[in-house]
Length: 298
Ligand SMILES: Nc1ncnc2c1ncn2[C@@H]1O[C@H](COP(=O)(O)OP(=O)(O)OP(=O)(O)O)[C@@H](O)[C@H]1O
Image (cartoon, rainbow, N blue to C red; front, side, top):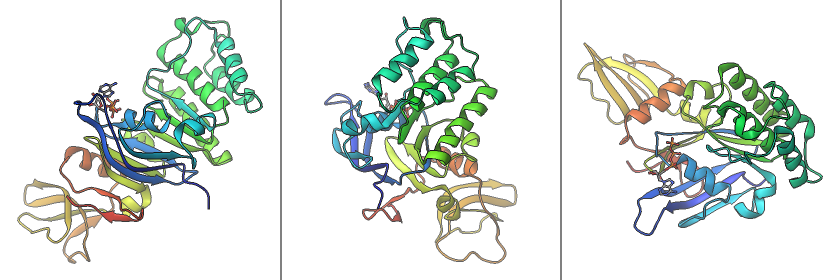
């Protein structure tokens, strides 16, 4: 059986001995070949999780395995683009790509890296320090993709790209996932953009995993209902409920068949994510110890 791309077990990180936990008790398994969205509010712990998987931070407790080994030994097989896009400002674009080739002997995919840079009409002789934020992102993605990574960790990669560049580069990333089986883990605040590209979801809130699993499974576990005001929703698990005049609209995790007179519909991914974001106390749906998707205590 192929190793999971990432397997976290009771993973936790706190900054400083007395600092608050940035991530706590985080367990999940991401199978190889998936495109995984990491979503959550500001400060939820998304960047911390990605940096732990990239081996740039050490866990305070628990473990994270990457491509069947530790994050440090997996590093040559992992591409990481973090929010700050650390590049050498004094190098030109062409020198940066040459550095990528030198650092990845026998592995470097000059065609893909060159194509990503060329797509932005970047002058290869331009220094990194004189590039815009979005242009830097393009160079950082070119470096990460040029490594022929088995796993790509991307921290808000699309945040400073214009809509055309987003569309183009998302296409490059999805092509990589489909053509080479590359696992992609991508944090983002733009949930609507993830619906067509991602097949796996990690929703983090307050440093804890609140939803984890295949998006189809997560959507199938939830139902949007509309019931006459005052109708009890027990025994179903309620993620969110809102009174609208004579009716109550709710997102629930059904615990059994729904009464015939309830109006029910499948939620979209955006509805699902927004409901959990608006309701930090909603019960989590996370993998259990055997990595089955089981109900967690509220
Ligand atoms: N180097 C650090 N030192 C101290 N605290 C930190 C450090 N990095 C992150 N934190 C804290 O850890 C928590 C999680 O931060 P993190 O950057 O992982 O969140 P995030 O989900 O990526 O947020 P955003 O959506 O704003 O990028 C926050 O409370 C943050 O203040």
